[in-house]
Structures are given as structure tokens and as C-alpha cells.
Image 1 (spheres, rainbow over the protein chains, first blue to last red):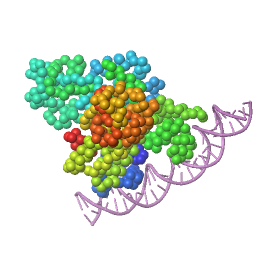
Image 2: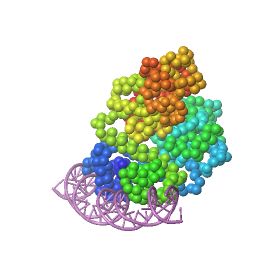
Image 3: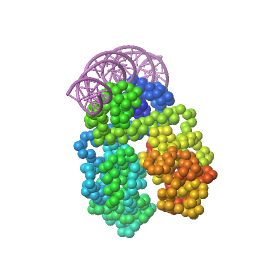
Length: 279
Length: 279
DNA sequence: CGGCGTCGATACCCCGGAGGTATCGCCGGG
DNA sequence: CCCGGCGATACCTCCGGGGTATCGACGCCG
């Protein structure tokens, strides 16, 4: 199976429309129809059920869509990492970090690693929430800091770096800020202080609260008294004026892990992981 | 990048010889040389350093060899799983198990899963030591039972099923068989009873002992008084006559996990994992 | 030190197949 | 009943992947 065929099939499977898929691929519709038909012949199984009014996936098509996306990501990752390895005279390590998280750990890690023998330059790639996994898988980064249980290490190699509790981040002056600790139940359904919404894994896509995309937005909304949030306690040093933290007794403990794609255990990656584990 | 180009490059990188690589690929040498050169042009970086006497990998080439193998495995996995999904009228689940291991757990799991609502037929694929990972990654299997720390879950999703201690398996009548427990040090350098050798991860590739490829061979050699071994205690019911087990105090505990490729969390896989966790 | 054998690169040719255009056949809606 | 949208088919073109013949570089050996 060639990646070209896979790309064609994935485009059609996503659009469920040959014409639009062809347009997206920058080609005409007939060769696309032919290519997909040929792929079906080669695989010996129909991938799509076509009527002149609609296109739908067969069970085999569902499988190929999921597997094909992963395979295409792997090919893209190979290409990107090779380009990066060839472009720089010295190799560069790209470390993906959720924007706004683990700042202190990150600073210590970068310092400690830079002092290592044979350290290579490290580029820090700040990601949106939940983007570190994909970024690792498609080769834009070599290593990432993840936070369980929010992120997932599925398909990655990882080592645990430490765990911490979580604190509620509230607007200054809120009724709960006098408490020495709160529980999640206390935070649920606070009058006039809805939980924020964020898209992606672990987020609540519906509800009354404001929608946020990253930590900065979130904290600004807390500052403005429009929402609250629960974050790992290590963010405290980076919090702005006007917000107050209260430990949450029963929040899940957050585990920070360092993760990398399993087959790219290069020397620099191994060194960085070793440094992180010794911190 | 097309899979054809990747296959060509991987062949050359493995053989380090254009002629032999071309032969392996069933083609002539000149088009292979051209294809690799074109790949280098497209990637914008040399992958091989050629003299008329030898071929060697550049750093970028090393990266592409590692990443490319993984990418090709992913493409093959997509192809195989799609074929399987399309071929059978009802989907079939392929479960990879190390030959000779976890027999009791396996039997219970298969029984319990077969009794589930919506269970699909399960095919058991018996693997050589350490082969379950690759078998999962290239799509020959959908789920596997692995044994940490011998196997690795790198690149896989996994759930823990249980841990157990290990026992030494010795020929009947051996001096140590009277002991109620032994330590690893006791087993090291036993006179006339060398440790077995096996290739693959965790094995010792050199040494005086006989070379083995699977459990059956290993146990036969123990029976014959030619070697000893250390195995999880759950193998005891399957041991043949003529061998004796003694608990090993300080051997690493073995964790049995059920693992699957992260992107193929189909309904049957999820059911089987759920069943395993409830055992 | 010169001839030879080995190996990758180059030159040149051919053909399959990928992609384009025109058009058909099917089907749902007004 | 006709129109419009959509996928399939027919047919053509041309690029490029693959083959053969050959060159040029470089160890090796007599």
C-alpha cells in the first residue's frame, strides 16, 4: 500500500464525498474514484458503500481510517525527524510542554541538561492543552512533559518524574478563599462561578461556563471573577495578582511524566530523560 | 514520501550495499540508486555516504532507518488489519500470547470473554519470546498478554492484570531442590548447570549454557539436567515430570499485562480488556 | 605498477499507470 | 417529468519508474 493511496482514502473517508475530497487533494474526481477502487481491489475488500447520493464507510473502512491516520502520522514523523536531523549541523532536541505548566521543573531540567556532557541545544515547543501527544507522534517534537491523568501516554514510552496535589484557583475575595482546604463537591455548582469549558480530552464541552483554550485565558477569567479552576499546586508561583489558591482535598493527584516515541531513543533523548530522572 | 521509497531506503540501509539490496527487492541496481538519490534530494539531506567500496549511514540516515521501519510497520499493520476486518463476515480478535506462559489465566480469560454479550471469535497466536510487541505493531494481532519486565509496552496501551513471584526450575534430584527458597546468587555459577542462553531482549547472548528458543526446549533441557531456569510461579501446573521448583526470594516480580495498539481500541478489544480486568 | 574485478553512477529507452477531460447512468427533488 | 448533483466509465496524454548497457572510481593482486 502506498502512502498516496492512503492519503486519498483518508481524504474521501473524512469528507464522505469524492468531489470535495478531490478538491482538497488538488486533483480531479475521476482519478480519485479510480485510485480508491483500485485500493479496494488490492485489499480485496470494499471500504466504502456508494450510492449516487451518499458515501459511507464499511467496517473495514472504519479500520483503515483509524489505522491509516496513524500510519500516515508515522510516515510524516519519519520525514520530519529526518529533515531535522539533516538540516542542523548539530542535532537539536525539541521538547514539547503544555504552555503554562511545570515552569519550575522545566527551568531546572533545562539548566541541568545544559550542564551535561554532550548536551545538544534544546528547543522548547509550547503546546495547547492535549497537543503534546500528537506533536510527538508526528515528529514535530522529540520529547514531551505530560501530566497524567489529563494527557495519555498511549503509544509512547514514559518515565514518571513526580506527583503533586491540586489546588483550586479562585478570584480573590471569594467566599471559599478563607477555607484551609475544600473538596470538589464544594466547588461544584458555586453560585455565580461556573466551571470553565475546554475542548479536548478531559474537558467538558458543554455547560454554562466560559470557553477557554489555554492557561493564560483561564487565569485571566479567574482574575475577572468569571470562573474558577483546579490546577496542580506547582503553578502557584506563576499565578497573577487577584487570584487565590485553596488546596483541594479529594482532587486526583497529578503525575508529571517525561515521554518520547518508543523507537527514537536517541542519545540526546536518553540523556535528557536521565537528567530528568535525577532531578 | 512514498512507502516504496522508504522500503528501498531501508533495504539499502540494512544491506549497506546497493547491489544486494536491489536483489532483495527484486529489481536492478540502477533504478534503486536513482530512487534513493531522489529521496535524498526530496528530503534535502544526504542519507548515505558512498564510496565505490563502501556505503555508510549519515546521522540523518540513522534517524530515517529507525523511523522508517516504524512507519513501514504501521502501514503494514493498517493493511493487515483492514484485510482481516474485511475478510471475515464477523470480526475476529487475534490474541498474541507467549507460547507456554500464563496458560491458566489465558484459559480463564477465553472462557470468561466467550460468555460475554457480543463476544467475537478469538484466535490465539502463540509467539516466540519477545515477539508479541512486533506482532501487535505490524497488525498480525489485536491484543497481547505481556510479561513485565521481560517484554516492553513501549508504544502500546496496557492494563495490569496481576503480579507473581518467580521460581527456579531445576532438574529433579539437584542439590538445591531440598531448599525451601533460594536466591539468585545461589543459582549463579552452579557447578555443571550453566544458565541457558536466549537471543532477544533480556537474554544473555553469550555464555557457556545451551541456546534455547522457547519454553518447551528450555524445559526439556532442564529435564535432561543440562540447564536451569527461573520462571513465573504460575507455570508450575504445566511443568513436566523430572523438574522441581524452588521459590526464588530476590527475583523480580513478574507483572502480566494485557496490551493493544493505542489507536485500535475497537469494541471487541475494549470488551476483552474489560473482561481481563474483572478476572 | 598495471590489469582486473567490484561497485555505484550515468545515459538512454520503454512502457505502465497516474492524472486530466468529456460523458454517462443513477437517483432524488421540485 | 425534467433538472441537477454525484460517482463511474471511456479515452487520451505524459511523466516517471524500471530495464540494459556502460562509465568511472578504487582496492587488490600478481
